Image (cartoon, rainbow over all chains, first blue to last red; front, side, top):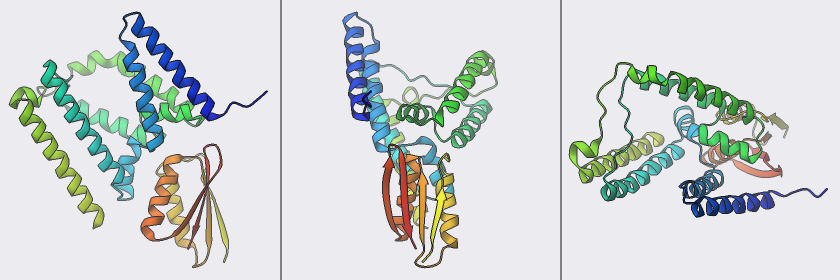
Length: 196
Length: 73
């Protein structure tokens, strides 16, 4: 039997997703665009070797902020994009209030992400590359997500502050300005800290 | 002019670069360190670190998703 090359497999996946998107759109369903976005984002994630877990470990362990600064640019692009979406549609983001549960969840997820070697998107991307090490990681991720979903009503009732959505407080323009300013400030601080 | 070998297959970030740095310190001038890894981000990590240090680095993809990195002290 002839061995299938990576390029052939990639082309097959792309055609499969395109056909799937066409079928979904043809039937008036909304999943088609999401499927194509997923395909594109996955491709970028794999090609750029972008890694959310490394962004933090590189910065804190090796004092190399290149990926973390890329993460800041990523949030900046998202903010500008969402600014236009929000301005046009008036839709608000899904904002969850801050509380000790957020800190606890962040710590848990962060530890798991660094120990496993990838965040959720990174795990799926590496699994797609054929990286067998990430099969147990995916199984752990599924177990964790199921447990999380099961407990969700408890956590949403836990003591927390009021949710803050900047555009509602100060309008879309000012909110974007503040967010971009803070992101650029962080970028500069990290760049300076790296050089020390 | 000794050659050292570091097998980092099965390790994820940040272990490969930490082990590489540790091993590289023990090397004498002129020694060569050969590293094998299958973690793509680790390849990038080690390359960036070597460039910053001004170390000679050579990367070769020996098989799909498997890299051999040669560092020269």
